[in-house]
Amino acid sequence: MRRGLTGSALIRLLDRLSGHEVRESAASTSDRLSQWFGWTDAISLSAALDGAPAAGASAARTSPAAEEGECQRVRSALAKAIAEDNTFAASEADFAPFRQRYLARQQAIEAGVGALRSRLRSRLAARSPAMARLAAVDVVMEQVLSARERSLLSSVPAVLERHFGRLCRDAEAAASGAWIQAFRRDARDLLLAELDFRFQPVEGLLDALRTT
Image 1 (cartoon, one colour):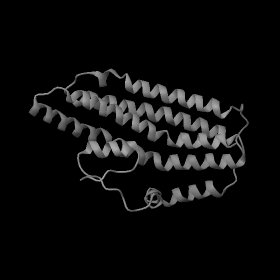
Image 2 (cartoon, one colour; image 1 turned 90 degrees about the horizontal axis):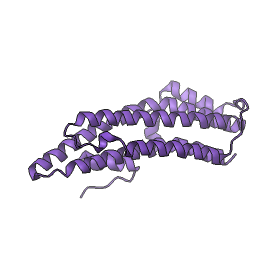
Image 3 (spheres, one colour; image 1 turned 90 degrees about the vertical axis):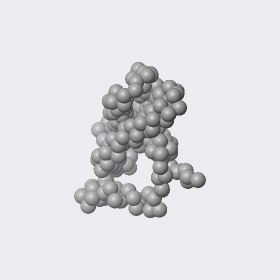
Image 4 (spheres, helix red, strand yellow; image 1 turned 120 degrees about the vertical axis):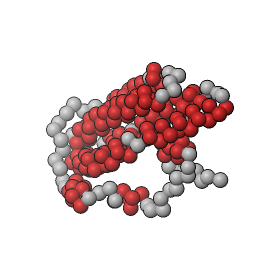
């Protein structure tokens, strides 16, 4: 029997759709994360942690509830766009249109979440020197991890394409057309799981705002 992964919904979905067993690393999260940092990245992170940045320029103070409302609005809009994408509703036997739309949705998620993250950092930096330090740490983390994250997530369509091919071949053998519905559902579920994954830093910044 295959051993199921215990990570995020995105990881579990990729494990299921990949069609082969993916083993969890025995290394700790901190050890794996450290491999993504070069020495210049470590210096930048140390400076953000040890420094004492002044609070950001004064800005109109908004309540955490207002920020949460804005984040929920953006998240709902991105999820709705995924659910209502006409390409994913088409009975298309060619994977190319799905790849293009999937990549477009990934870019929309990245842009929407990135704008929220920047906004929340600005709000935090205006609260206090301690919150400004936290915002500075998040800047470094985003700079270091975003390129690796983008590279890894850009490989998801390849996993989805192989899944598409397997479903199509199995359907041809069984003379069934229901496979395309299953594929569309899986593609949407993957995008929604990626949306949840990308929102984790936003939720962390929101938690920090609630404490100030």
